[in-house]
Image 1 (cartoon, helix red, strand yellow):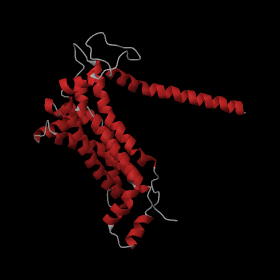
Image 2: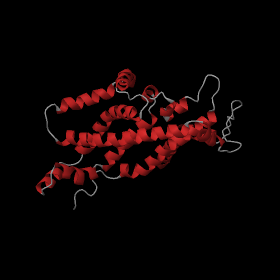
Image 3: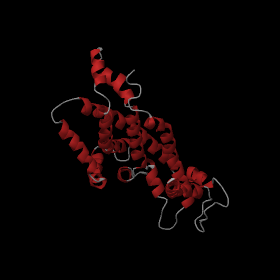
Image 4: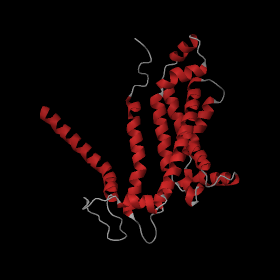
Length: 276
């Protein structure tokens, strides 16, 4: 029986190793390719680089509009994340704790909006932003991104707030706290893992979004990172090495942010809420 258990353990380990290699290999190939010198022809496709150079990174910074694109994406993503998180947190708490007419209808409507394909919303958004004179502005992208990050963020936070006992609200009310004081001083700290997860979702979605930025930001100075990287694939040539260098620089901030926020995901949702 023990030999059979050891055999299954070995199979599980083997499967995990295979999956790890399968999912990490694209990242490895991206990094390895970025450390090669830029070439128009005769690209090095060896599994291990024969030489390591940062010329592709230098090329992206000096010979392309990558710094401006990074700045545009940074501004849009950060503002969208902050705005989406604040609105979703307030809405999620309201749906979780308050009773009002049309509550279930609004919750269902928010969920239905999430089901619409983005391609159906591009034309209405473009017409609306053009009439408002917001094409090629950060505000247009922030408004668009915030609108389609809200449904999932709100529903996600409703679940987190529902998991927090309402007895905590009642105890706070008995002690003389009002609704806002209860929310900010008691409920919000306990919902920190949910708020962090929601913020990370909004950040990832706004950082990597391509379709809306392609339509709402057409000026060279308004282009975001996904457009900038995609524009390096042309009919006549493709600089794979600089493009991979750009992809590494685009991916690194999200990886670092996820590592920083990981502690919020593993921490207990109501740890320390009730003293023994």
